[in-house]
Picture 1 (cartoon, protein in one colour):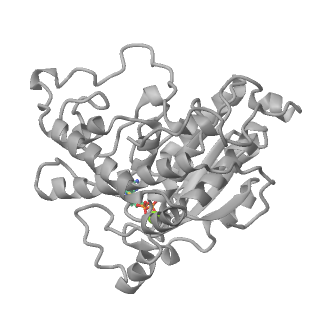
Picture 2 (cartoon, helix red, strand yellow):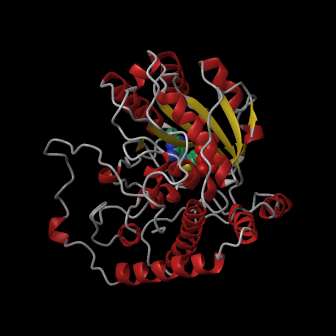
Length: 379
Ligand SMILES: Cc1ncc(C[n+]2csc(CCOP(=O)(O)OP(=O)(O)O)c2C)c(N)n1
Ligand SMILES: [Mg+2]
């Protein structure tokens, strides 16, 4: 991991065997889900469009895995299915959502990636880039003012670092030291625009200008992303403010399933294919004696069952089309999830970010070896 500007030292927890198995399960879960999603789209079964994060799985999985149960993701974007899987959102519900079938997440009102899971602390996105970054900074500000011991994490592509809202969010977060983790997925492309035609100074280098560390990490290494996010979370909980993590990677498919990406140099793709985040992690785990094939088989069996259940689900009742369009009640509080990441972080009890800044050390949060619930099976 290279640091463009110095990040404070951090105690990185060691990942045990169950954690590694879970991480691989989530990586494979995202890849296989999205392969199936592309197929369903090309069969004409998915209304609208379908977007995937092939080659970028390690970022959303590694970042989400480092969060605590009370932390909030605002929001997973089109390359970030892994974050939903880590938080524990039901696979069948996500497939139903994409197929426009009746479901808990969107009630079949939408068939794209604009969904969250409030019960698991995941805020659904709007497409205007990078507006969810501003919302994430606002959430972090609320956590700090309420003296809650939790952080907000947001994802954005390098292309989203050009509009004004990005700079406003960076400035506000840095100035006010909001407990927010800003994860930039630098895949070198904003649709067909390469980074060389997008900006003169890279995202991580710019972080210093806003008063926060900019950490460059190998976005194809799930454990490196996990470690960088863990360090950023510790820093935020200490009251030291935000961190920009620039995870460098490559978009291996088109912008969406409708895009054949003929504008991308095939040699570049071939070079990145050698660094595939799943193949390299599988090789590493296999060398450690982990039964990678069993993990794959379990993930595939769950996916098959989820697709079957989703395809058997009816479309929503047309007479309900105007229901639920507007919020008519008090919003529900953002809930906790039940995923293995809760083993990596302290809970909301203990010092708030402001208290920590005043000198109280955050409770626990340094090692996960044997701590917290055992890493669960990926879902
Ligand atoms: C304000 C705004 N302009 C244009 C778009 C259309 N759009 C959606 S994704 C995208 C490319 C974004 O590139 P990047 O931020 O690098 O993310 P990536 O797709 O590479 O993950 C564009 C132009 C949008 N969503 N919002
Ligand atoms: Mg990009």
